[in-house]
Image (cartoon, rainbow, N blue to C red):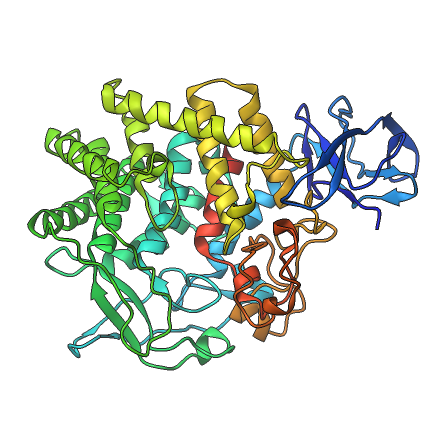
Length: 539
């Protein structure tokens, strides 16, 4: 079948603009809403690649830059036609609004209102106190964000999602100017920017997840995942599962990071955050042995287990040093850096996900910008990784910085973490390839892929519609709320529905838009958050 793949949201004026054809054609045309041809060009043959299985032809229309027009366009070639798209200076404004607003819809407890949630409103949920597992003590941990397709709330995952957003604020002033229609919060300067008002919801929850001694409970969930019911219908007992050194380190790190942001808006709140960060760090200092996490026997909620905690402690040390300037944290940076180097993974200091989080510590070092050997080493590692990713992108017709083995569970998160790395590298070194890789990655996410699917709900003529997410499956609203990032293609095909797909599919085609496909189509807070970071660099 002849297909033309294109970013279905559109392109920023002045940026590179490409579509991908899976067939040869002498010419391609851009047509407007009146069915008039407004541009023509000749596709160039790239060839077949292993990630898509397609013999690809590139339609480059970067020269087409209509000024002031609000038309939508399509690309036509040899009888085939693409999905529609726009070209404008504000083409990603609605996307950013919706990607940010998703965090509001994922709020837990009594934080939603019909005024702001509209047809996606649900009644208060998970309002009961949680039982400390194995102890019986009851603790109030209401609030925060539901993590993913389930109703669990996880300290490490929440910290990482917050980190993406708060580092986004630190790197890009544009993010504080984004408005996405949520309740306002008063502060010293008037009102918190929307992104900081939303982050405060999760920060307040994580403050409750910290024990008096500074340690942090790993997660609060029911013992088993809830069936597909609305949040308020999930009535099983909530449990606070044991503390972990990863959760404690991540919370120390993100509270210190948050302090550097909120001190410009709410000095009293910023002091609360830094004090809590210090208590967590003190606990880590007294407990040098890793305290890792495993699910209780029989429990099936998200584990978020890790094999080591050096990357978490490295992040905590770097964030505390950046927030306070205290040299004792710099000494710990060196100590944990050396431990991480022993692992032999040269890329570990650019990892920005919920597992190894050393890359988040690197962001604090970049922001500190001491110009010392540590700073120079981190800058070089980001440049090297961005160069590697640019090289990977050159090997396929979609200019996508993904290899075949990058298409695992949450491949779209992997892509967005890569785009974060390239975005940061672009701030260190001005290289035209970096901007091109970022643009192509966003193109892929929004429809320029061999599934011809936009992986963000509500954005694109062929946007996916069936996320693995309990509220959107069980409410009475036909469409899911907009702005949810799908996990995306996954060669593992780990759920029963996905396993019915042919196992010899190219990686990019290992996808099905079905709510039962949790290994392909789940959502999480930390799949949306890196997209916020990357888009902030483009606004």
